[in-house]
Structures are given as C-alpha cells and as structure tokens.
Image 1: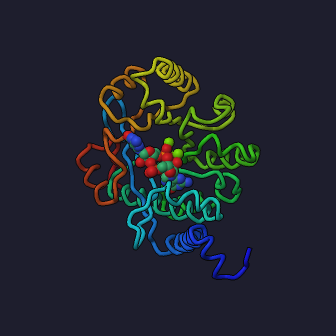
Image 2: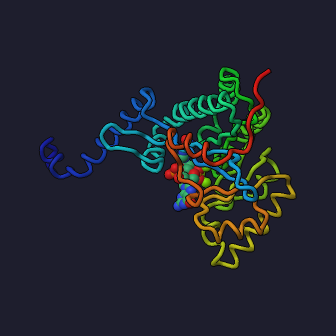
Length: 284
Ligand code: C2E
Ligand code: MG
Ligand code: MG
Ligand code: MG
C-alpha cells in the first residue's frame, strides 16, 4: 500500500475523522471541567410512605457550547479511559456540597447523593479531600451520600474497601448503586460499611410483570432490612409499581413518576412545592 499522506487519509477518512473527533472531545472535556460547563441536575428521592422528599441525587451533565446538553453516557466513558475521572469527581463533589450547604443555609437539610466511579475508589487520597470539602462548606457528613457500584470493587478489592471504609468513617453514608446487577452482592453487603442499597432500575421495571423479579425484590428488601440498610428503588415510573414497592416495605422511591433530574432553578421550585422532610431549626 502507498504510504503517502493523501492516500492514507482518503482510505481511512472515516476512522481518522472519528479518532480526531474523539481526541478533540477529550480536550474539550478538560476545558469544560475548568470552565464551569459541567452542571448538576438533581433528582428527588421520596419517602415511600409519607411522600416527603428525603434526598436528591446529583447527576452530572455537560452543557456543551456547540453540541448542547450532553448526558453521562456521552462523556463518562471517555473521562474514565483518559484518566479524567478524578478531576470530574472533584468538580461534581464540590458543586454538590456547595449546593447542599446553600440549601441548608436556607433552612433545608437535605442529603445529596453523589456517584463515585471505579477509579475514585482506588484513590486513597479521596477521603481526605472529601473531609476537607465538608469542613470548608460546613456541611455535616451525614448530608453526603456516596454511591458506589459493586463492579468498582473488583479491580483492587482491598484498596477500594479501605477507601470506602475511610469515607464511612467520615460519617458519610455509603450506598450501593444499581444493586443486583453486579457480582458477589452478598459478600459486599457483609463486608462493606454500607447504609443504603439502591435496587437497580431493571428490577423496578419488571416488578409487576415478572414473578421471579418480584421474589428477588421482596427478599432483597427483607435482607437489606435485616442488615439495617434502607432500600431505595430506582427508576419508578408508574403508580402501580410504587404501590407494590410500598407493600413490599421498600423505603424510598426515585424515578420519573415523581420527577426527572432537574436543573438548579427547577429543583428550587420543586422543593418549594413538595413539602421537604426536614427543616433546620433557626440558629440561636
Ligand atoms: P445512576 O446513578 O443509576 O442514576 C440513575 C439514572 O437513571 C440517571 O441517568 C437518571 O436520569 C435515570 N433515571 C432516573 N429515574 C428514571 C426513570 O424513572 N426511568 C428511567 N428510564 N431512567 C431514570 P443519567 O443521569 O443519564 O446517569 C446515568 C449514569 O451515569 C448514572 O446512573 C451514574 O452511574 C452515572 N453518573 C451520573 N452522574 C455521575 C457523576 O457525577 N459521577 C459519576 N461517576 N457517575 C455519574
Ligand atoms: Mg446513582
Ligand atoms: Mg450508577
Ligand atoms: Mg443506579
């Protein structure tokens, strides 16, 4: 084959365009993180019995100047592959904690959940940075929930267990996200200092139509309660599913039925209209 530049770029034009587009996006992501293009949407979590708002989950979006609003699926894999996940998590945590502290200052004491990625749990310096962030914003650690997935524990179980343990020691709540989709769920429930389990959306979705799913959900909730964990159902989209989850003694419901992840302005309105659970006593 001819190795002339022109020949190669013609032959490979698609692939070449793809990979340079890909690299350009990585560079754009670096810039995005330092220029405030990453924003958080928050999805409310409701007490399944009272309907009170008991928390919000922070979900990252990229307000891209040209491409518009991008979702985690569009850029998180890229961040992970190119070693940007540490910085991304710093940015997300800083925003989540800042906003939780601002709500608290206005009298609303609402825990915020932040998703951690696999590489975050290999970072032994993460707990100290989280502690520092909480102190700087004067946010009680109990108002921070850190969501980890079972798969993140596979690469280096010993180290990630130590990191999770240190995060729990700070007083933050550790939650297992997408529960039921990973491996060795029972060993992690036994060994990790977790306080919350989030039932994966795939189980919620099939609850009413699949008897085996229903059996798994019912026994998982019972198991979680026996271990002292609270159970959050993800992806609740209809009243029937909500009612059934309530009858199975699930604790918290999160999903489009109640609210989609909301941008900051909409979250404020939503919270004002949906009688939040806890209000801080006015300072003396
Ligand atoms: P996740 O943590 O399991 O978050 C729940 C996802 O389900 C969110 O998608 C949310 O918008 C979507 N969802 C919520 N309710 C419903 C529903 O009723 N029906 C359906 N079909 N979907 C629902 P999103 O925001 O696209 O995030 C996808 C995933 O990206 C998250 O899954 C999480 O694993 C990851 N992610 C999001 N933000 C961050 C972040 O700041 N850091 C890290 N490391 N990961 C994040
Ligand atoms: Mg999550
Ligand atoms: Mg997840
Ligand atoms: Mg999830």
